[in-house]
Amino acid sequence: MAANSFAGATARRPLSNVIPAALFAAALATMPVLGLVKAGTEINLRPYLVAVTPELLSGLVLNQGLAIGGALLFSSFAFVFMLIVFLRRLGGRFRRPLMLAASAVVLVGLLSDLLLSFSPDDGPIADAIAWFVSSDGVSRYGAIVIALATLLTSMLADAIGGSKTVGKVFASPKCRRVFWSMVAILLLALPLLTNQFIAQICVLVGLYALMGMGLNIELGMAGLIDLGFVAFFAIGAYTVGLLSGHNETAIASLSFWACLPIAVLASATAGLLFGLPILRVRGDYLAVATLGLGEIIRVLVVSDMMRSFLGGAQGLVEIPKPQIAGVDFNDPIYIFYLTATLAGLAAWCAWRLEHSRIGREWMA
Figure: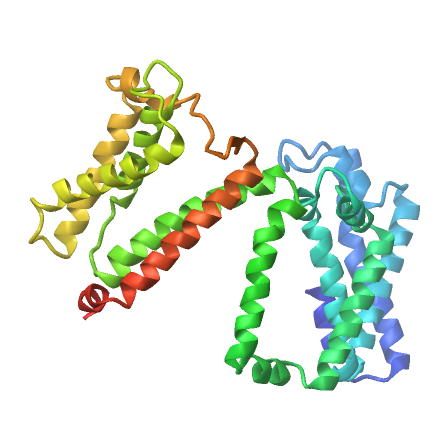
């Protein structure tokens, strides 16, 4: 804030007046820091300022002595103030790409831990990510590459018209289809390009997408405010677990594919039995009724009374993975593609239902 205020106040002044002003502003910015470090070394500030640790005080002077650290801070502040004034004096044609390049480097550095979570265990992609970022932030060469790439991209975008050109391209339905097809291919390839942790997250995203499509049919198309939709989701999941599990609570040892239609039928039957008594209920009353159903199912599932049947808070364990032609889907990547396939099938059914006569009557 101080640097920006200084830059705004001195941007139009002659350069001979800017340099003394920058030195004066740097001195004003350095003195409070040195005062805090001096006070912290002579007085115990921890009872009043808990976060003022010796490590913090040492870091404020760049792990140097008070004199050397103060000189380094003063020089750094003066350089930053002069750099911001220089950027303010540039025209928008040059200032914008430089600011975007600096912002891109800072953003990648802040998100370095997130980027590392996408890194595979080994391979060229893992080596490339490790070359750009580490747990300490963006690397020196990575910062140079990111800054140059952002700078060139911004200048090229300004040269060809920027957002106007992108808007014209996306105005074509064919270009939009190509773009979203590429996005879908990238998302489908994401578990293969990353690691099992990302694959597990993608599986959860697929499961929540299935739930969201069901809610879209009920809330968006039929206009029914259902706050207990997760109860039917739980009924289907526990049906599969009870019919296919290898544990003391299992009812049978069927395969996943044999349990799947039974689970769908069980969820639909539960919805029918619950919907008949409240068939004429609408609005807030329907929301209250469905919210009560969701809470009843949740309490029953985690209760000790149903522990011997539903596993309690631990849930059902030792549920076998799906199989296709003798191949076990024991890898999160395989589970993701199975989830994506079922989600795509559910999306196609929802789309067909939306454009059917029943769907049009629901939305009428």
